[in-house]
Image (cartoon, rainbow, N blue to C red; front, side, top):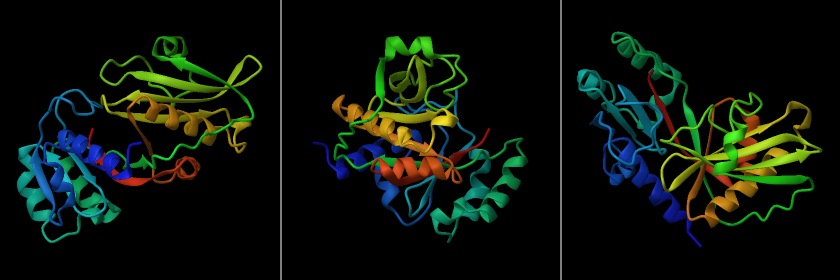
Length: 248
């Protein structure tokens, strides 16, 4: 079975591709600034290169940005602990500089890695699995804005989903996209009238175990204030592992 250390090493390898740096940079105390570059194998959430994107695994910050703002960034992050750069006071100052180039910071993404121990959920409701070829018929349904992408995206395709069924209705859906060949991101949606029944956690737990069986690593992301989503992640054995943000 894959170990927690192996999972964290895989994350560092992935973030090194995403942020044009070395995996050792995430273990440093000083903040790291790199040139924005699209490297093969990165997670593709936008087309082209990022103007500014920043990540922390809890100690320093690694920032990949357009060289035009490197002088500001190098001066601004000097002597600051990287993880504090994600607080509102620093976001305000960074945003002022980004605004000069017509850019706006997006909200922070709070990301989770899994403990590898299987959960072996035995749900009390009917479930149905959807392989990648079966997911196509689920696109366009506004009930699942988080479990699936809006449409098929070849750069990070939805590859697997599991649904909770009541009669002939899907009342909850957990899906995962292959954001990179090794790391698959889980999303979850539960119909409002079926929430607080344990459906979300059970579906995420089932999907987490199945992703490991397919030799990939599941990960999970949510926003700072989505406490219901945080509770699902924690209940399913995920733990906070990194935070990132970028511009649009």
